Each structure stands twice: as structure tokens, then as C-alpha cells.
Length: 237
Image (tube, rainbow, N blue to C red; front, side):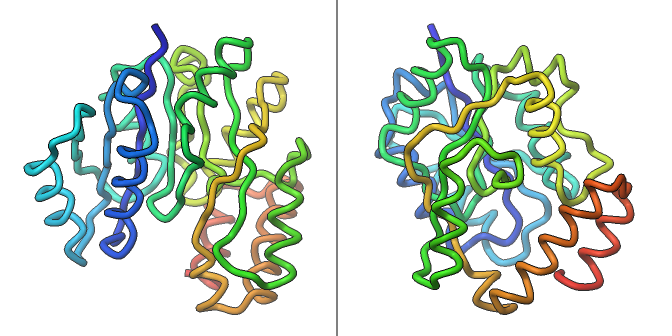
């Protein structure tokens, strides 16, 4: 029987993690979910205390687990995958709300022979560019992919690909996606996941989009994980 392990990397997400966890619990069927694993990378804003309290008071059938890792989404998600008992891994950002019944949509894809993929994505913001960028995520073009769309993958395939490359402090999602595209192992589920536009709001839509494009082009031309991280620290972080 197919079972999904939901893995959520977290770093200072006290404002969003509760909403995401409650949604995942309420909008999925316990029979489809092996567990929800939150992997913290060193939060200092009360996220740890909030999740610990939520786990202590969890009355849902689905089990919640909190792990602590060194900082870095690739490291955090790999740790979560090692703890996972499900045969399907679902990597979800702590500020993204998956569609209702996301679990069944994912299982349906596995049953159809699709071993990995994501959802199409929309931002919680009405700016015309973000609406256009959201609309483009319905297509299979690799340039329209990103971690905010969440990723599901058959656990055996994930292990065959050696998981997320921990050399990447950023772009780890896209690195894995590139490997899956090279094997023609990726599908876009035509249901919306909603993600936060908070970084666009705080840094400016055009400025941030320019830097994201630059990172994409740098990677296309062979930039190393360290080069991408240095650029990110200089212009985005």
C-alpha cells in the first residue's frame, strides 16, 4: 500500500508552520500518510517550541515528528528522508499550502507510473507578474520549476539518485529536478499549491526576480554550488 512521508524543512517559521501543519493534517487521509516529519535547522523564533507543543497535543491519527539538523535545506530534507517510513517522499516548504487531497493526487500519479513530480503553483499575491509566473508553472518546462511547488518522489528513486546534493545551500531542489528531467521522470500535477510571496514583498518583485533569473542562468552555464551560494548571500539573503 502506498504511504506518503511528508517532510518539511523549517528555519524560523513560527508565523507559518502551524497553518501548514493543520492544513496537511485536515486535508489528507490518515490512511495515505505514514507520518509528517518537521526538520528544524536551528530556529530561534519560537518555531521549535510551537511544533513541540503541537506534537504533544496532537489528537490526529497521523503522527508528527520533529528532528533537529544542521542548517541547510538539502541536509534537513535528507535527514527527514532517512527517518521516513513511507514509500513516497513529499518535500513541502514551511510557507506553502498544498491543494486539498494532495495525498490522493500524489498516490494517483504513482499508480499511473509517474515516480516524481510537483504541483502547479500560485502566489498569495495579486501582482500581474506573479500571476503570470504562477500560470506558467502548469507547463512542463524545466525553467518553470522550483522548490515552492513542492516535490514528491518514490523513495527508492530518491535513494538511487543519492537524495539532495548537500553541496548546495541553495538550488538543491532544482538540482534534483534536473536529474529527474534528464531521466524523463517528472510530472506536473494540475492542482494548485499556494506559496507565500513574502520575499518578493520584502525585497521587491523585479529585483528579486532578476536575481533568481541570474542564479538560474549561472547554473545553466556551469556555476558551482559555492558560486551560487556566494551570489545568493551577496544579493538576496
